[in-house]
Image 1 (cartoon, rainbow, N blue to C red):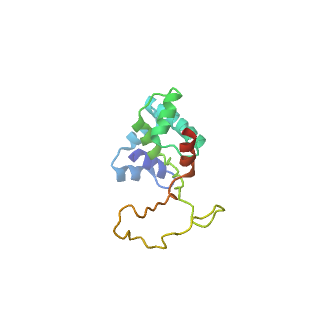
Image 2: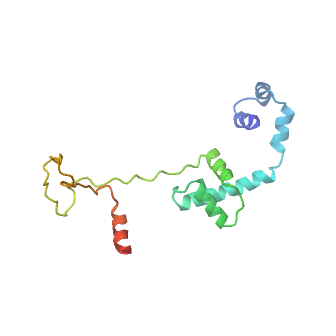
Image 3: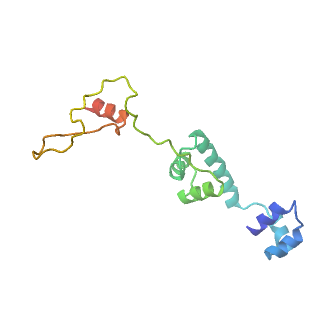
Length: 150
């Protein structure tokens, strides 16, 4: 982490004072700089490429669980938490879906039922005298599915 910070700032500041500031040796920094990437780092790079491809294919809707399932289906062997960590460290975020809201009243061509209660909701002592419901919160797709399955 310190070496990465030094490397990122090496274009603006001299390396030796930054190594002193971060309390690391210059030789350690240069050894890190010229060290070949580890097998884990290479695998993480490959996974990150695949994560970005899947993320782009699904327009950013899949989270780490579904991306993990997709990568397993493609033959990649990795853990779900590794995918989550790679996504977090590289700023790959799920695009939140637009929340469904019921249509506001009056903006349709369907007939409107008459208002029989006129806002007098008190039952007046007799149980089951007035029943009221509102189904504007139910998605139309669920209603049509229910009728198709019946």
